[in-house]
Length: 195
Image (cartoon, rainbow, N blue to C red; front, side):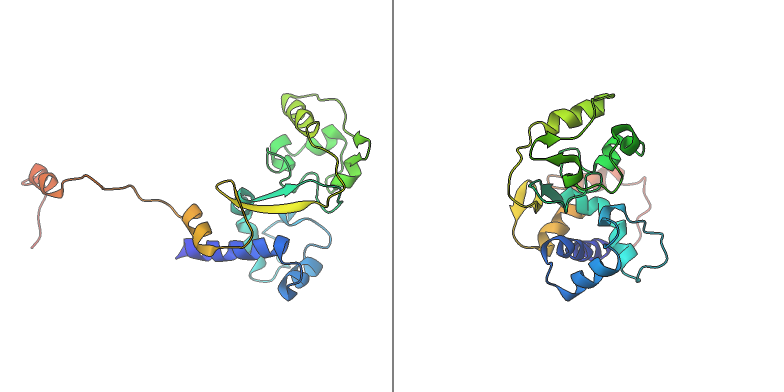
């Protein structure tokens, strides 16, 4: 039952990115997301409504399905949104990544690049080198940033709770091929049988 609840709560995270016209989304954005990105919020803050910390606990599961395709928009946060193949840069480069790269913690993509290219310093670590190599492959386009919800690499236009549930639920081992009668004979006499 808990896994099903998580799948349904992930729909609310999905709505934050794909249902901008929803009254609930407008309320959450104005109340909690007007000053910081969703992925940077702390679930232990006591000013949230009862449901919002439950969504924050599912951040890592949500990041598994969401990726931002970078365009020219300034709505994508450099450190917090999953726009690279490395996931969130805050996690990939660590807590000190912001100061080492000289990019403010709440900078948007527009703050670190323009039509001429990226405003990033030379790499000083292997991970920074990986990041610089990655961003050098991104074209600068006139298209807005696009969030994408994917299941097993397949982009989804709608949220299907059953598909998410199948992805996040624990899969039990298959007992196919196990001969239960021979197992009973193997343990007969060693295990007390009731009834």
